[in-house]
Length: 135
Image (cartoon, rainbow, N blue to C red; front, side, top):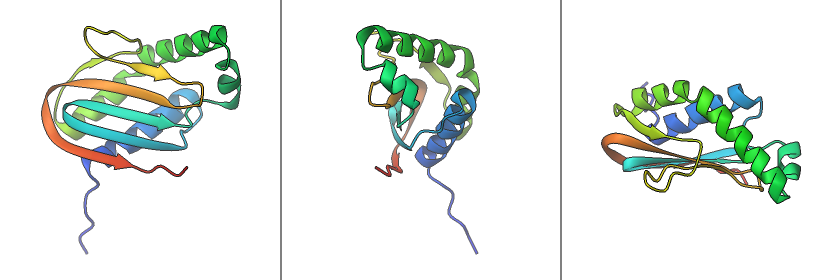
């Protein structure tokens, strides 16, 4: 019996969910991946803990949550980058934990518990979309 291989986007979603669980101890509720040309957008729904969501309701707390996740992402993202490169066959050119308008890279934690990560790839890949939104 032939089992179809998961799409690139589905494989990336699985890798991102495992990465988030490993680095924070909290798995996101669901993951959406959009892969188009040289851009990869990973949205982790429900990625913040209840304590982080409560803290993020206030601007000072939101800044602290953003800084924490930015630093955590910056120090731990190499394993996710490598997995993305393995799955797509394209080198990750840019991935950042801060908003950098000239490069257009973003990793943003929203108060509602959603995290968005954008990776710029060194070459184009086939367009692919995956979502396991269980809202």
